[in-house]
Image (cartoon, rainbow over all chains, first blue to last red; front, side, top):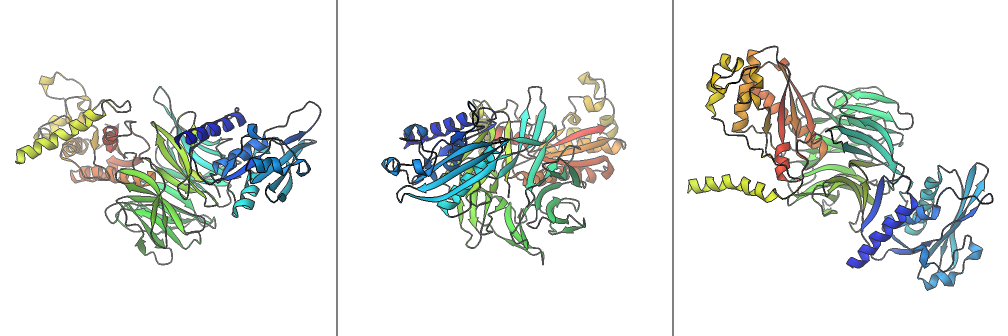
Length: 432
Length: 181
């Protein structure tokens, strides 16, 4: 088993190393395999372009890495393939049955003026029938996104639920220079860690990125004025707006599901309390009124209530508060420390930070039953964020003294790490 | 019996520190404050604190810069998830309270910090609570509210970068920073 695991890691690193030499700021490694993954083959795509030209990217390699990373698929190495068809008519299904491949993806990239047409088909090998086929117009810069969209189509067809490959993650990085300087950056990258783009750079701490429901803006906390303040920034234009800078805390912004309000934390009453700010009318409503630390609000998907962290009972625990009546009800009872909830998209469960014998781990709790499952096994795990399809949870952890991002499947069986080349990464937030 | 118990308690932190000595991440400085007679600062007349240090130290300069003064201590430490002021911290804060009460134009920022364990925004709240605890103590000793500003940095600005108790105990702190004297 150990050897198998090691081979898996090797294979995964090679795949990504080969695919993205140019911009491999984050690299994904499969740190724990999964038995019973679906055997699939993605044949390197054909190329139809001007004489002597090269395709602008390796679409099949991106799809293969996506499927492998999800933990639900076990892609066949290219070197094991007996043939390399590019369209249905060229497929000899016996070749693939011999290799126990259950599903096959073939396709080609066709140059078309300034743009490209990406064609692909997905086959059921044992029934020898096509399942889906698409022709997608793309550009050189958009080719990775097109590949992620194809991965989503394959995932949805074979797994029966939406994929989350064509999404993004926001996170904070910190680089400490030798002269003692600290450089903070709010970054947005593709969900596979590629194509990282700085949204904001600062010499003061940045915290708590939260996506707007339309995926176009981020709310976050910046210490650029030497004290915490909440900002909202449009990702594409960089246009930003100061939202709150009251004396004391200005923290933990979270967009409401309808995008019209921001839940946030202020301490202008003397201790940390949860407020809701109407972004249009700019009126502020205080939701919690306690002398304890009330923080880290997250919205129920229907917008009717919040879950927040409070130590009103002596230690940090999670509470639910209905916006209609402001009455809080304790949700967590297992363990001394439960905090920083993140909702699953269906609203049935939350991921949270859970202390287990001195270690801080990511756990998932079913809201109906209160049953807790611990997903991670390291010591300093924090900031869980659900994938928009609910299949995985991304979180921050520490590895050999470095802050790194990891993702774990909701059943806890598959883990992947996204490692920065330089500095520390933390506070990942998965886009809608 | 009581004595034995006390000895044991005193030895444990040393063992913990010794156990961490081989870890490359661990810091060398122990967070334990040097023992200062609790009465020293409190019993001194305000004027003595506010002017030059005692002559026998050979120190000349501003009293805030005298390394042998309690005023030279600008950091107080806390237990995990706690904001209670320890006995050592009380003495340090009391000496600053006297200085501030006597120098009404002096201004400080109290920075509250937390160790890295647990969640970040909760730690922001915890850092603020620590800063507020020190601030409240200062007010009780006659410091004016306008002289003090509390800012929490949560776990965002650790003093030590290790990932074990030897660093964590240095990071659970409140720092007294003079903006004007």
